[in-house]
Image 1 (tube, rainbow, N blue to C red):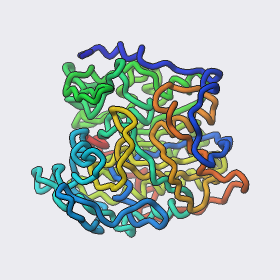
Image 2: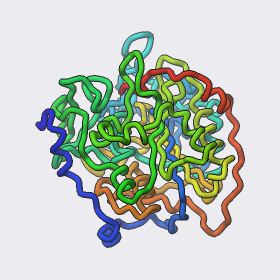
Image 3: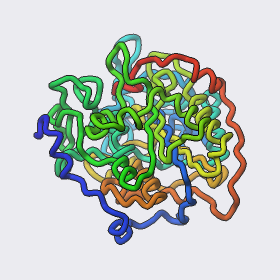
Length: 440
């Protein structure tokens, strides 16, 4: 099954030029408006939280106070800490929890606790105390919370980060990479013999039968470069004692072995602040957190994630960039955590379980909860439409755009700083952890 033949994936995707793309766009979301002319889009990525885990009790959102276990028993959600044991969130875990749309298997996945793995039981049925994630709730109240954002795949972080730059992970007709490679780092720097797993168009899971994780498929970078639109990928330091660091573009051969590896893949991630200060913010940015600032559940008791996001938003909001920038904050996958909404199954990959999404801009509708069905391809479509790039021809073709979240009848709003426990200086002064943002 294409073992080690990454080059074949280039033939599976056709980039659609603007003229052709304009002829066959999918139906737009109800009430969607033309996009404002943004000069900058910043995609801030967080890790491993379901929508209900962070916003189960948010007013006006599609949240929940209870779920069902695999016996059909009603289980009340418990309010808990942001610090939370890691739950299984592979494609196998998704199938257990999804249970053909019944959404009743969250008690069956494994929980990493006390140095081992045990069944999650009722531990999975919880939500985070809003007081511990106040910056996220503040952004939702001031701007837009999307409560039906679905990841492209029913899988974990490796493919989720690929989907955020490419829309899917097609490596051959009817075959998509899913889950994570057999060795780290994940990407072209993986050791020889590393392979991936596949899911076929008929839903068959082919464990360890996919190619080496160095791909030739097109990404949003190709469309941006073709139009001369600037971009950067702000990511934690790539070298570490563990040798396990990774980022999405490490999996893209043309970037990893081209000049953009040193010019456009920028480390550490805190250089986003320098770009804003010096007036060198590119048109499109992806911002990946250090492991210490990731919301990823696990044994490390992290509480800096909400402040990290708040400081990135504040830096842009308090700069001359504010009036021309849209900031999208989202979580890459659900982390195995409870969510009550059965995701539409659009193909053999997914969609995956809902993740939170915040859309912050001077044109965002104040306090608006968007119930429109979005997916990661919606963000690619947003960028493509804003700069008239054409289409990648992946999930950007089918995805709803996000134009309904903007109110163009009003002038751009003034920015209000977001409170958070940790300062920008804290993040800029603290050394990088050297740890991967995720390993599942």
